Image (cartoon, rainbow, N blue to C red; front, top):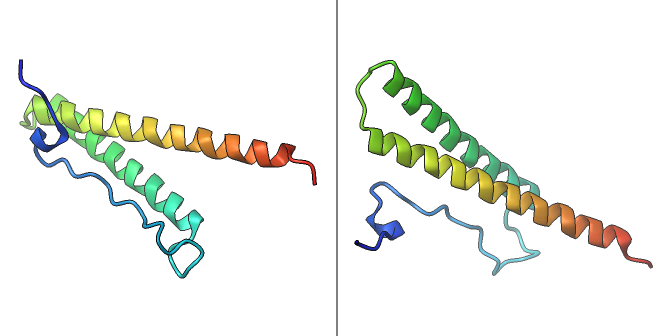
Length: 99
């Protein structure tokens, strides 16, 4: 059995994360970073839905590529939800602090 790595998956590109070097500088705001991340997840979801629809309608498509697109969308959504949970948890911790 061969080892599967991210480099072996065709057309797989890791998302670019904002640099933390200029924290507090003139970089993107936290809200815009989150907005871009949600937009990226939405694009992956729409792409997967389009490919599944095309495959179901018999428009010709490779089932392997469709499954990869669906898994990319699923993993990115799960990651987004974990980030959301961490943000909510951090907010709740800050809310509990006594000044």
